[in-house]
Image (cartoon, rainbow, N blue to C red; front, side, top):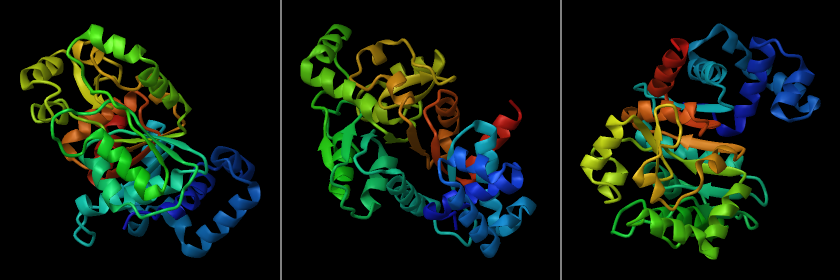
Length: 316
């Protein structure tokens, strides 16, 4: 089983103290907790045997992998869903783990930005109900006009409903027919204020899309398959909140992006907690691009994906 979200800080404290050799006050500063809390976590780690992570025992193999991946990539926190024969199907377990992590990251009064897609919708579908009045859930990008599952408004509304929070939808299309029309719509006070308010978010939840011919942008009709192929040929690496990024995680200056109604990517990068959940092995390269671009601080992935990421960063 993966590390329980509520025990994550315990493992982090033990890793920093026993593996990196930080003093208790240094661990406290890095984790933004009191020194007394660090001492308590280390005592619990010794009692439960977590300190044996330094010897990479099989019991904590995935936890060691998570800490190594954090060290290599600079990600703040990584959660790993195992795929061995003793574990549940990771496609069923992933949303459950991610939903628990997501709830742990929310603080009273937070504003949360939410994107769209199958992964986010599945997370919302299994999220337990909570009473988080004072929390606001904001849609990160415009909506899809054609009937399509996992729409941005569906994801935002369902997560807000599960949290008993306020939900704010963007009542504009994701992609406009012309750049001029997109510019004019972004300038409308309601849309402008909604997009600007995303900068006040403390947490963002999303996955990263691919640039293949059957990607979400193609299936929802935002791009034709040949247009997506042209973007891929031009160096596209993935999709964040409906916008195309290159292989280094930078915004691509292309007609599609200029016609998008979506949060500014620099605004998203500046949000303190950027939680990314990736289920499919096929999203490895898009995930690499997203991490390079600074779009993830908290990551939930499978063991296979974590090992591939660590190997990529180990080889430069």
